[in-house]
Image (cartoon, rainbow, N blue to C red; front, side, top):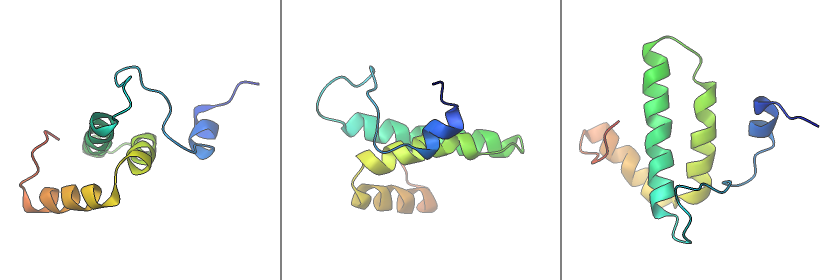
Length: 86
């Protein structure tokens, strides 16, 4: 049975294996998916396109990242002091 991408996103439970981050420590994976989510939103919003494909990155970072980190990063983005390039 072939699943569509929408079905995969809907049935998503936890972060799948990512060959870019093969080690147990998933800190970089967490941060990269957080950046990818915000970059995706920014790029698609600038083109007035649907941002629903960005939900994948959000689900991954929410399953990998501690909520305290995400809260801190959100505050830094609001204050303009976030260290990542979005």
